[in-house]
Amino acid sequence: MQSQTTITKRWQTVIPAAIRRQMRMKEGDRLVWIYDGASIRIVVLPADPIKALRGSGKGEQLTRKLLAARGEDRARERR
Image 1: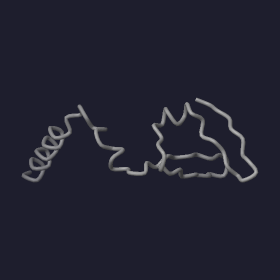
Image 2 (image 1 turned 120 degrees about the horizontal axis):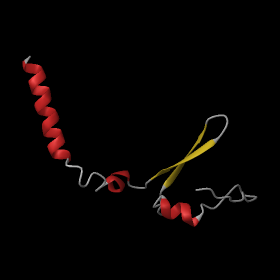
Image 3 (image 1 turned 180 degrees about the vertical axis):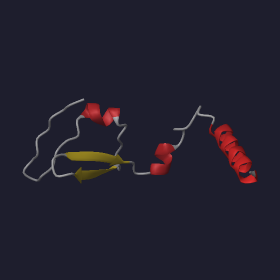
């Protein structure tokens, strides 16, 4: 996705609506600007990062995977 905006006299710009929707940005989210010498990356930091992650592992059967990994660790320790 590509969009263009203009920088105002006060050094402000607008985040295009399509990008805001795609990134699920909300009022209060913060932006981190990363400059690598050739380009700028903008990373969205949610106002409440814990709440933003809630439900992201749904359907991944994480408890089963954790218990299997612990079983493998125990088996390795017994050797």
